[in-house]
Image (cartoon, rainbow, N blue to C red; front, top):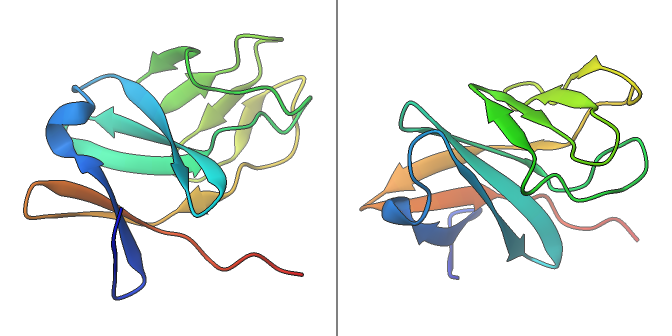
Length: 110
């Protein structure tokens, strides 16, 4: 992965087929990238309910459903749409440059 202007190159666009998602370690964080009609969205790969990975959960458009207890999130806003989770997921800006998905990750706070 390489960093360029605050964005970090994560994967080629072909690594995430339309309608699917995949988790990546980016700057020490597990980030879930979703491909929704060839638009990429990135969120924290941890459910805000019990810190369970979201990767492998059911994806319905821009929504991801946690496999553990069924919490449902909007990948565009990070908003919890259905319990038991109530807290938002962190959302990260994405862009496609030269066939690569890039994600902007803010620095960790000490």
